Length: 484
Image (cartoon, rainbow, N blue to C red; front, side, top):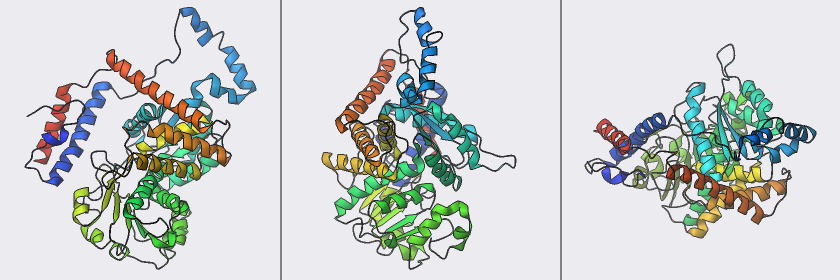
């Protein structure tokens, strides 16, 4: 068998031609899982801490540490905001999770989320020039149930070490209370990437998809499949961006949301879902089969597929239908199957299919923009500004049905996005520091270039090893054998 190259660019051609499209998709999924396990074991994770200041001589430790550092402590004591200038706080984000809903794998126990949280920190640094640290906490109380107050207390106590907090993989309904309380009670941005981040990038993709099909946001009928933190927030952000909630229908694991759902109304923990019950689905449509008739858009963030979203549902959608199936690691329906059913534009959360709608294009730039102006929070307006920036950037470089949104490899999108977010923070009155759009863009671009150059230098000098070829080929062979 021909060997796979380390950039993985020839993966597609190495999968047996005799495999069906579904087998090929399964092979790619299993390959990345097998590779991830081998690569994480080889590198012992993927993040490390390195100095940003030089050690010219050992006498410098008298300045970096005691006795000189005493001046830093007392200066910050007298004006806490100087901590953004005198420490790394202003460019440092804590990625906080209790690991109760890790991607599509559910509750993985507190340490089980570390791989994802390190991955988030990895993307923050390489894509956004932001330092991140993974923190997985145990939110279980004496009764063994996960208590949102424990996460809230932890973040409130630790906020003074960071410029922002990125919440991640916290199961609903706890995620709603954690985010809403911390957004109001912390003096730094607290951002839930599974919710606001996913909403931002989904909105960006939807804006451009609607341009391609010549439909307006306020006119389209949208069906949301799944009512977790991601989709509930997507609906809120999409409505804020101009969609008509009365023309949308949302489904959770029990059925359609509407004012007749007393189970949601009575469980106060699900207040975000109840808000959607009150403004969507006025006709109280009960089934997906009925809801999908004439729908212009399907946004699914439910459970991993395939075959969770049925071909029959897509077949009854409106002309030039838009289908976002973003469950991980396997979309609710494979793109080829959705296209066979009549979908005009299909997006997923995966980078090995066209139209990846994934947080990775959003949160690095959003957090960078918030940090640049030392924002106190990330408002919904800032998330919408980021979505519009991504959509505008993508449209300028050209979009089509198989390419509706910029990819994470397009490094220019992140400083562009960061600058727009910074300007919106100033406009919303949540910024501690003011700057021009160009100043924000230039700083973000410089920091991103520095992060990438530093990583490349470590590779060039052998401090970061290249992945062994046998690791990649063993992973591919294991995936092929499992699918045969």
